[in-house]
Length: 232
Length: 296
Ligand SMILES: Nc1ncnc2c1ncn2[C@@H]1O[C@H](COP(=O)(O)OP(=O)(O)O)[C@@H](O)[C@H]1O
Ligand SMILES: [Mg+2]
Image 1 (cartoon, rainbow over the protein chains, first blue to last red):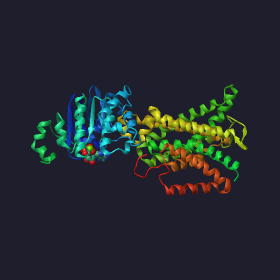
Image 2: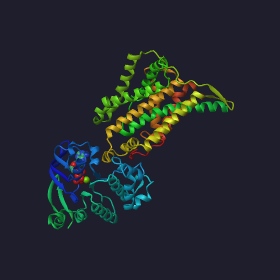
Image 3: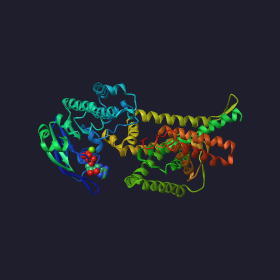
């Protein structure tokens, strides 16, 4: 569904991504794990067109994303929940969700009802300014906003960052549930254990390169992964 | 002060304030979206006023209603605003705020000098689009021109609020200043929103030109610079980047100016600016401004 080949990305003279290839098949949860600064966020931002690539190819279904105007990518039904949530702080919860449907307003109220059913806390706070929500609620809102676009696939960048252990559990169960409803997921996480536990496959990144890839269950048992990312 | 004098000053202040408010909106909307002070914005009052100066006789001769020249001014200002943005500002947007600022200052000088070459340096008299009588209301003289001007200002501001709250483009205009990346991710073409913002800001300046010329029917090539400066201060006073702040700031500057003029005619500029400086010393981010670090 999503296929990246030989991608290289840089910030000025700094080469952040070297020759990365990865693939996500329809229906999968694939996680991309690695230490801080490995280049995970850069890969997601490049997929969404927020960052320009130097070389390589990014295909989503039939479309060459490097040639697609960034604001049109959501119209291909590829959504992105960015690192740090990036909700609209001066808009209400409901307005944030409406913004999620900006590119496709068809059946907006039905989709919103679904989102509210999944995240009842958002429904209770729908008239509240999003900037006043707690971190966990903002993360729910960021996921809810992505769902409003009725995506086929979601890129998620560290959804568990800064959340309490209880909320981390909740957000991962939501990701699993979203996936069971037919949405493909590319999940970036530093919480490798949790990410691997819900994923089909995974890639491990180290300083801009893919250092390992494989079945998530096998990676969970891999000694090197255990040592480097699972703290065991 | 007699009640009648107070009341007259109040509506004069509101009249002046409504003009500043409409211009201040143009500064604040552009700042909100691209963090740039568009120093050429004041000159759009001049462009609007000259458009009316030339089109009012045309309309009259053609037997068409003269208010159509307001429409002409709105169209001309929007088109020039968009052209300025696309040709001059967009290319320097990535080059840093100093380049953008200098480009805007240069654009202001360019527009004022171009107007002098095209239309001459001699002040021209703009025919009034509406000229209503002054009526007596409970012993107070009510110039209907002023009332209508205030009303036009209020309608424009209310219209802008509704536009920004309810329409898709309006929502995009609110979301881009809050979070540009997130706006792109939900499908907003940021460059298009910036261009539309310039068009709307310039159109409001055209309406401000109508309101201004109803009171002072004189058009010169540099009429926009003083008006622009005061409106810019009004935008900062209300909290730059915040739309209701521009409206509030504009009305306040207008009221302060008129009331100070009443008591100290020769000093009113100095005192008005002093009051504004004091307000900004107490609250540097403006009356409706958030504390530093938070995005508007
Ligand atoms: N805006 C930026 N400018 C310069 N360097 C950046 C920028 N964003 C990220 N980098 C660098 O690119 C590398 C990868 O960063 P990032 O993609 O954020 O990693 P991760 O998400 O895995 O923590 C890091 O070395 C980081 O310092
Ligand atoms: Mg990251």
